Amino acid sequence: MNQHQGRCDLHTHSQASDGMQSPTDNVKLAKHKGLSAVALTDHDTVAGVAEARRAGQLLDIEVIAGVEISTRAGGKEIHVLGYEVNVDDTRFLQRLRGLREAREERNHRMIAKLQELGLHITWQEVLNELGRPLEPDESVGRPHMADVLVKKGYAADLRDAFDQYLAEGKPGFVSVPRVSPQDACVWIREAGGAAVIAHPGIYGDDELVRQIIMDATPDGIEVFHSDHGPEEEQRYLQLAREFDLIVTGGSDYHGERQGVVFHGDLGSKTVAMEAVEQLRAVTSKRKSG
Image (cartoon, rainbow, N blue to C red; front, side, top):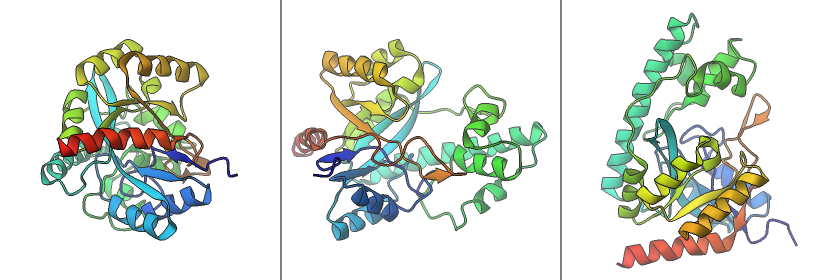
């Protein structure tokens, strides 16, 4: 029996945001790995979901409609995952569009900041690095800037570009107003979905995570993630039990950049299909109520 049979990767990104592959390619890779299901969770957009679903039908693998919303709390950028959202919900789509507009403003301000630091980088170069026209409702992120910085010799690789310039607190970073985790959870619920706090270990502040759980009342927490070690997994399992949260997990797959897979390879972090059933039970109740 395949080790991934009955498993699902609930956190992957495609070219609709800052991933390297098409939604179809992500689904193909999930099928190749023997997964039973895969979620597409692009940043502030659901533009790739329809394509992923079509690929899922052809390949006989379940595709979960997802999104990853960028929020801010406690002075940190906090990500909230939404699962089984209604991708045709007009109000939800308008809200996501507003987030992408804020992201684009941040991108332009970051380019200006990098230029002030003496780095010769332009917005057009970032768009050119995509290798294709930017489709409607797709979003551009910091990894695209990192690609240009690496190509021009300002950084050794993606991680180095973030460590030197692009990560929060670094010289090229710009913060723009974001919605709160509470707002993101409300938006996801109003679109019929289930809200999950993404990769809590990345924030380095478990008390903040606890406060967000109490304030935003998400449905789940991402316990298993490529950047979580065994100790973090145990801590967040305990937190999930304490607050009766659904336990989710995923690789946060973005594809390969400069020969390195960032954060983890698709299928490297998975959960049992029971997690999908639990998420769907929540959304089914929400949609019928």
